[in-house]
Image (tube, rainbow, N blue to C red):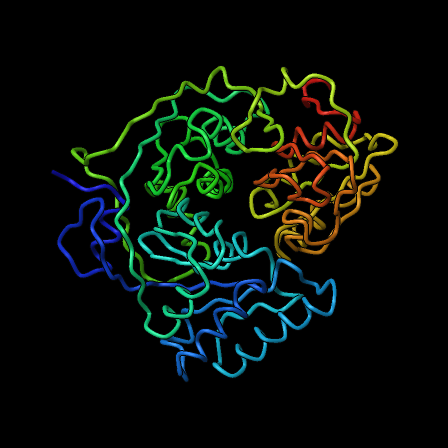
Length: 419
């Protein structure tokens, strides 16, 4: 019997001919990631273990993105710990404010993640990199500390669920809608500790950016990782960003899957996740009349240039409704610069939006858009749990950038088709 992509990657990094679901293995890692919330904990554990040097100064990545630029003294101290550790260890990949971005948009952009890699990060949305054919998963800060010392981590080999998407996408439907639709179907625990393997003709038409969005939210279905088998688009994407060698793994035809689920996307509309769960999805046409106070377009899920272009297409020549705050957050400095070059910022500013420097910001209730009691937001972020973006009595709805932009213009949750 053959193996899945995930099984092949894990076997190769464990020095084994094959692995099976449920097997416990130790595997070398290609990249270890942490941010300004999780890195200080890992650094503390690193020191308490008596370690002096990281296993490889070119395989540790530290990104201050959650509360950066620093929102208060506590966040400034967190970032200082990271910065001093990066200098002490001569880390090649520490991204200071001014060159950084939201970590899960930044690493693919910088060519740091390649097909066949194993990447662990002390952030649950590390699964984003599965869009490039890597096994990428979130772990605890203690696991990151151990990996910084040894270059290895242990895993239980996950079962794989294969998701096959057929048909042709409707206008305004993107990877965000497909993953919300999928989570709405299987629930937030429907892929618990399993790999979600995304495939099908509909996905072949998606950009790498949209695939990154889908892999990003695998964790919202409880998955260990999300993964795409690399294709020509993937290879072009990575070749434009790095010359480092890599290995492409693809699932065998006779690979065993825990389950295979098929979807015809031809009838899938833009989706909206209602509070307080990403699985509480409805088509935008069934959203009803829900007034909003704030719209947020950005995050590691939907802050890429493709997302900003989609929002600008909706906002051009229009203005945000009275009483609504529209916050645009480019995911990296490079995306910020590209959006400026293309004239997108002029469209956003003319629409009376505000533009933030790259940061996770309001996604986790950090800063740059916290909600007050009773307020309602629509956001292109990935979670809408109770209190996720501010007050526990606020509400967050999730959508793609076009829907978030249209909602900002109309002052209520709405489809861009209405404009």
